[in-house]
Image (tube, rainbow, N blue to C red; front, side, top):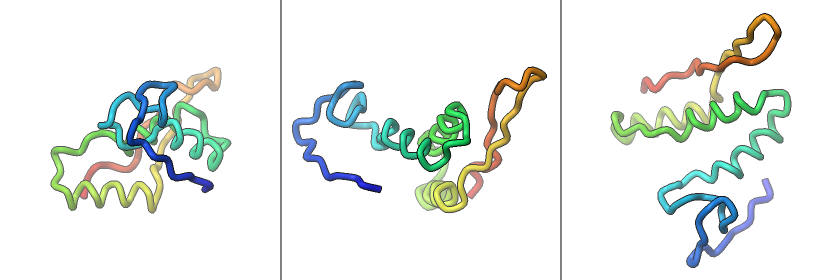
Length: 103
């Protein structure tokens, strides 16, 4: 994928910062993931890609660690299955995931 190692000992936070994250608690580099997802899936609308990313990174504190890991593993291995809905004019009006958080 062409990733490079970066020394972030003196990381600057914010959209124009070192990694583009707001704080050290953001462990997923959403901007990098978004650009990679768009390049790997050019026909999928940006709204759907953002929805999939949100599905991957949302909190799973209600699950125990092995359950949460299985959910993430399945998303990465099998992909997030989504249904795009459109109105009569053909515009996208939403997306929903077909993968749940069931272990």
